[in-house]
Image (cartoon, rainbow, N blue to C red; front, top):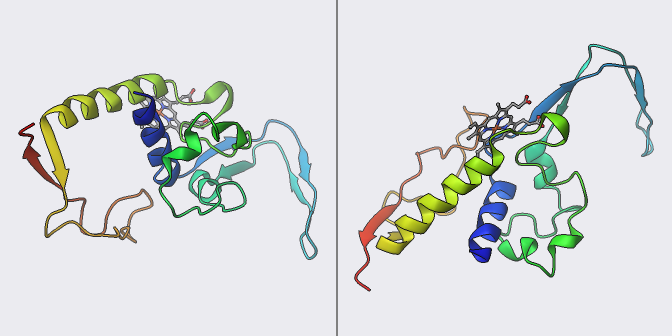
Length: 154
Ligand code: HEM
């Protein structure tokens, strides 16, 4: 089940179901300018900061060859290279997703049983590579997500 775990982790990196999360500031804080031309940002209590989960997961600074679906990123050899706070499909900190373990268990259980009985195959309606719907902030295929399911014979 180790490889299944790597597949689920990489899927949630490339296609996080929640593309952003947010936090409301409880105290003042200044984010200093780092690069030329930037200005410091002064946050005050009540300001909302949006965390672009999808943008961070797709930043090649943190995940090289970012468009490549590569479960090995989460393998034993490589997972230690993932910089803290750059991978957050379930958010982070004390208000992270309360259902994360359940969601992962459910996903793995469904795929385990489905894959033990069926093959998943591309069909005419399957879009490769998939294009995302521009009208939806969440990762949804512009023509839906179509896949064929055929019974396994061995
Ligand atoms: C793949 C499935 C799921 C994903 C990707 C997901 C993702 C997230 C994310 C990103 C957050 C915000 C965390 C943060 O801001 O730090 C969140 C919060 C939350 N999620 Fe999930 N979630 C999933 C499934 C579930 C399930 C199955 C449940 C319940 C059984 C659940 C219950 C919650 C609750 C209650 C919160 C709010 C936690 C709080 O504010 O303290 N989620 N989730």
